[in-house]
Image 1 (cartoon, rainbow, N blue to C red):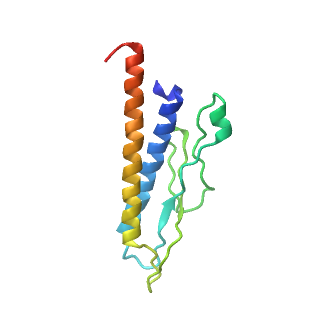
Image 2: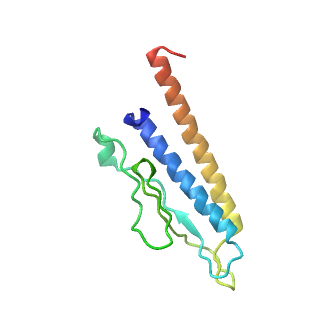
Image 3: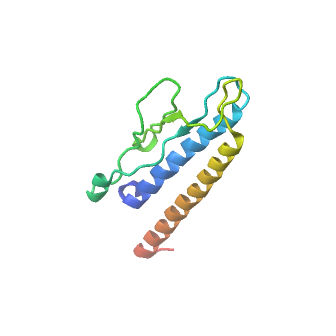
Length: 134
């Protein structure tokens, strides 16, 4: 019902992308001791400004081409793809997971998810006030 309103579609897509990123970061941490494991990350959320100017709403999250090992989701018409992240260090066994870096990224995801949730809740409250119910 609310998917027809741009603010709900945009925040919903943002929350979907952040959930997928959290999943990829958790997999990175779980594989921190796996030899030759390459840290992955989900590409940043991007808006298609041409679509936002029209009444079409927000573009689907088609972030990269499909390759084996990529994580995808088809919920809400979005595709979220994980790619190998650039790493600042590599262990002697070939593992590129830096736990401190992953924790910082997880904190960033949590902060951004809280912000998207707040926008969603406030927009719903504004909509309820506009129709006269509490």
